[in-house]
Image 1 (tube, rainbow, N blue to C red):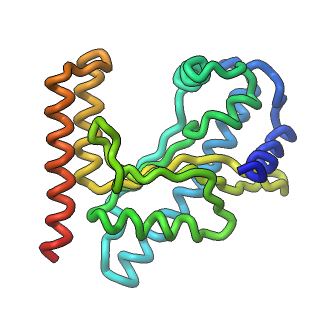
Image 2: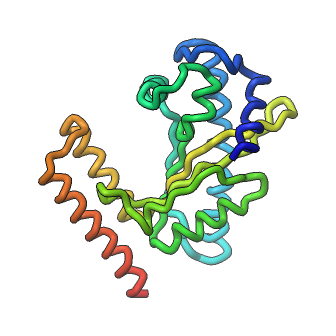
Length: 216
């Protein structure tokens, strides 16, 4: 991980690394551009895998791909919650999910196939990974999370940028989307009873995922 952060310091060539984060200034705009390029780079590689499996193996390994960049307010709120110094250095080194890609696949076993292929892509390095498929969160949330170091080229300089990848089945994605909407409607807090209900739904989703594999 230490080597990854040394690579990330190369961003200093393009922004004022020790400057205070301000969401409307030119430095923030430059940094968001760098993260957007990293998402484009990785998304293209994932789309290539998606097309390869359709054409060569007649199999829809990946159902769909979503991308997003965290909003300035969301980034600053997260930094505040983590009690970080409000500098670009602290932001780059500690906020791992500024750039995010969600890969949704049909079956649970596809998650691990996609994960292994992403980790073997040339130039891509894994900084961190969490298996919430084998060990779901207490809320019932299930997915595989990767923080990848993605190389991008700007003015003939290679910069390594962190991108978070979430891989989940279509059933997991359905549960997560509904649960998020329910939390939003309830001002991000669910009652104990509702939390237990959503956990039971997550277990049902997990059983369904497992049963689909067994039916093949």
